[in-house]
Image 1 (cartoon, rainbow over the protein chains, first blue to last red):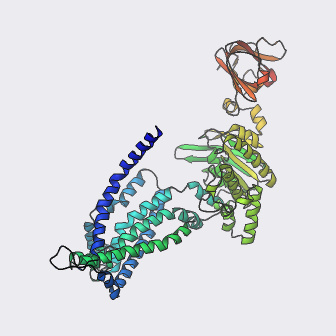
Image 2: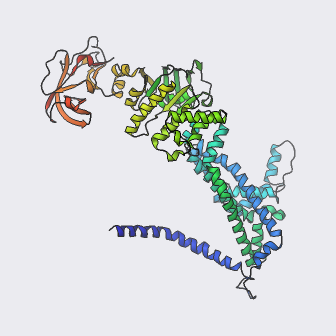
Image 3: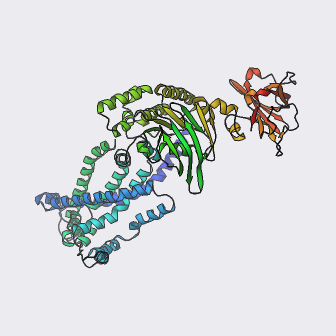
Length: 287
Length: 347
């Protein structure tokens, strides 16, 4: 009897889990394996040219410093965007979680997730309209300010950062919000009753307790930003060459899939190494 | 240590009046209970004394100085919360030391005072643990140690024992009383448990709908309630007579209930369940008030037994040691009697 119950339970679990895992296998694991296979070829196997197995695509990364420099540039971009998103998003999440209630909270939440509702290309091109010389931003500033200003952020690193922060800000707000909401208000009251000021409470209680959420949001931003190519290309123009754009070029312009695949896996490996190195430090910070 | 005095405090939240002209004195070193049903304003009063809330009018003094403009951070109070509110990211020692570190106490002194506080609550060995590794009773003690380690002027406890199970709660009551006595700190606690309030405090304040109904020593409030609400809220009360609306007491046509002298115009007469005696025959003694009724239910609860008796339209509750209840079965006709001196007059 108990055996059949246990079996039924197992079947239930299996039937609930398998759609997701089947999907993940088909949609991610198989194409990724194919790409991994490509990365060890001299040329795409479905062209007319001869091809053979080689590691030359991986060697290419180490033969010049160009790729490493671009990767470093991408990592820096990732850190910068993550940093900005955290600085902008965390206070916002704090106010949403702790100060605002009811209807107005729902309305503000809607505004937060608005970027998710619009097409990313539309979003980026609207930033282009805002940031270019004689664009929306410049006209607006000149109407308000008594003196003339020249604002042309287009095709610059700040433009890329602005665009990326806008796209990924909701992640850090949502994850931080969840973590902050779980913090018992009595903890803050208790700290106040012991004489702690706001800064002490933020530093010793709120930040440590919401760190898991904040970090989850940061990782969710950092990983895609390091490999991003659309925002750097459209908003960055000539300065917008990053590791992500180089990979994209291999696939859509140069048609060197094996090199693109190899660079992708190097990026993946570096990101995983960064997360692996960071995780014990971050875990210690939490305690 | 300091005395606290609350003078004519009113606090409104929008249209809702949480505290309505509340006044109460809390002399230095005493143990005080604020008692009331939920929504009575007792927690609001405690939070106003703490400084989390500011009164709309009236004033609060701690140690003869007005604290009306002083926020909670600067009031030098210790507070213990219902769910203890221990910082889950810190060890027990760090939790207790939090207030000391905020005050920038030297690390030697910090360690010494944490040790003393933990010793006071008998948890010296658990300083390195995290809150989640402790039992409910232990967390309670840590919260208490944390509240008193900074030598606050007043200790405020918000439903301190309500999260504990019954036997642990009684242990903690004894413990709380011992510690309060040892350090002599003025302590104010909020509770909805009337027994807890009676057991622990030197003085009780009873709140209802934002108003202070009555305050005084537990025994005097219990024996001389100012109104029917207090009589029924603090302990059980059998209402034996009510005012008929014409300024006369109506004893429901039962002349064997003696109306105490001068109580003819009182609003009600009551008698406590433990003042009642039960018998199968009519008691003949002089000076007794008595009613005739039917035993509806008899409940054995270890030390004490409870009897429910129906007398006309009134239902009486009687509590006595089981051996003092004669061998009666449910449905039998019986007499309830009490010494007339034990009749409570509700003005």
